Image (tube, rainbow, N blue to C red; front, top):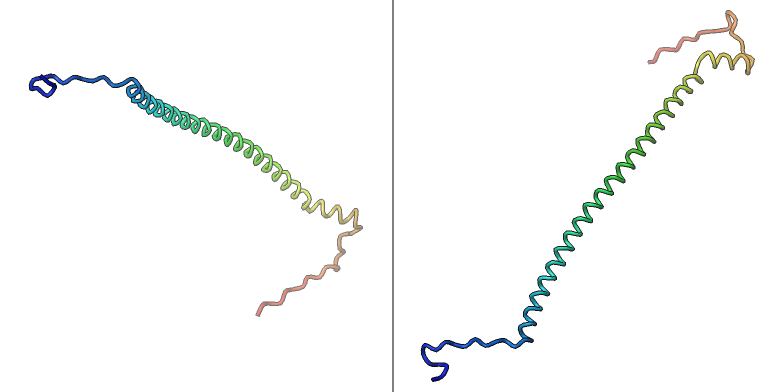
Length: 120
């Protein structure tokens, strides 16, 4: 009887070793490629998180430096306003006028008040 006989169990043929190892090699290659891609993705996300944290810390330091600079400028502005007030003092101006410029107070009758004409 031949293999085509009814009720005969077909024989399973063994694949040659080269073909079996090629299929397994391809499967391992795809699995390795997926693992490498997943690892690269995780690494990229981790690097993004670290970069974001470092950037936030750097901005924090920059903000603090700018706040200190602003505080120094506000203090300098206050000091300049105080100095400007002292320089504009009527007593100081009068003292400079008398001592440096030799001016004196006007005598009675030396001052004439001129009325401004009404606007038409």
